Image 1: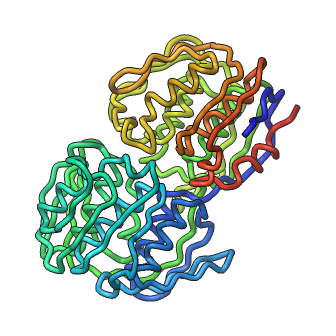
Image 2: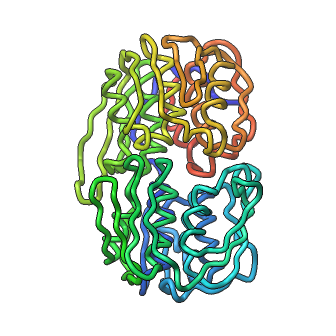
Image 3: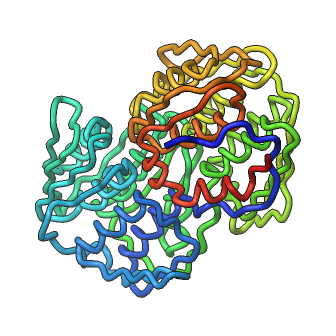
Amino acid sequence: MKLQTTAKSLSGSIRVPGDKSISHRSIMFGSLAKGVTTVRDILRGEDVLSTMQVFRDLGVQIEDKGDVVEIHGVGFEGLKAPQNKLDMGNSGTSIRLISGVLAGQDFEVEMFGDDSLSKRPMDRVTIPLRQMGVDVSGQTDRDLPPLKMKGRSSLKTITYQLPVASAQVKSALIFAALQADGESVIIEKEKTRNHTEDMIVQFGGEIQVDGKEIRILGGQEFTAQEVVVPGDISSAAFWLVAGLIVPNSKIILENVGINETRTGILDVIKAMGGNIQLSNVNHIAKSATITVETSELHGTEIAGDIIPRLIDELPIITLLATQAKGRTVIRDAEELKVKETDRIQVVADALNAMGASIEPTPDGMIIEGKTSLHGANINTFGDHRIGMMAAIAALLVQDGEVNLERAEAINTSYPDFFKHMEVLVHG
């Protein structure tokens, strides 16, 4: 796909698609609650559609009526053995979290995904699930998909210190712990996005969170709810960066989720001197309108406990750093190596091919600022965030064409990405 290059300015107002993390979890909790849950503004990207289909395969009636999705919940005890293998597509969220859901089910399943998902290690989930009594096996010693799994209706409780900062692993263990006989304790390495914990409370359950320690009692039941999904800050991030680095730009993003565990990118933008404002803040829905304008930026250091709060935004933050004055250093981000791709290497290779100066390190990158970008052939390797980062980078290109291979990966999280680009790009 040939990308548009050289935008003279960006302006306008858009609503980014619904938050992917919340969309996934609304389907899961709606399926596990009693009654009919309605979900508005759900993201209909390929990852979320994978989750929706898996729960249909597990016996849950889910109706997509366009403006709203209705989920006829069956509770944990109402899930049924699927007639087929469960297809998780490209979605790491689906396979990891649903592993936790199925941990307390005493039937056999096989979960598989696409080529990209089949390279992602699942051992960080399977190791603690085995400790809880689950029979699960994957490929190689890292338990790559496909996964074969047989849960048990009498799950053991667990006290587990997470070796990595991962909301997916934490959430998988929470789902398993909700089906165990007694109280489980999960201790995070660093605090990560807390949508699962928030949704337990929203659906009438109980969970105790004290700093990095989480306590969950098994045997809880959930009640159907009405869920309104805020816009995904991970999708908004691409336009935030575009508005900061494309000349003469001002972009307004409506109804963006600002959950405190997800707003690391806003902190980084402020630290780099970016012109960004929040308005129409809804403290209950944790959403706001965000306005961003072209800014003179300077380099910064991104490390430590902020990393889990912006892990998915690091590819586009890397592009932002190439246009700031001075050097930016990213550390403590080794988790990027086990995303849809090794995002440290793939991001560096893609932007360096366009003229950037980025040195990959074992846990991050060193990025030199104020570099000019030129045309190149960029492969997404099936990673949606690499595709969108390259599309934003192309807007700065003065020389040559940017051709994007496997651009369809963007549909994973943002099917209307290029439509929104047409709305915002001028000149």
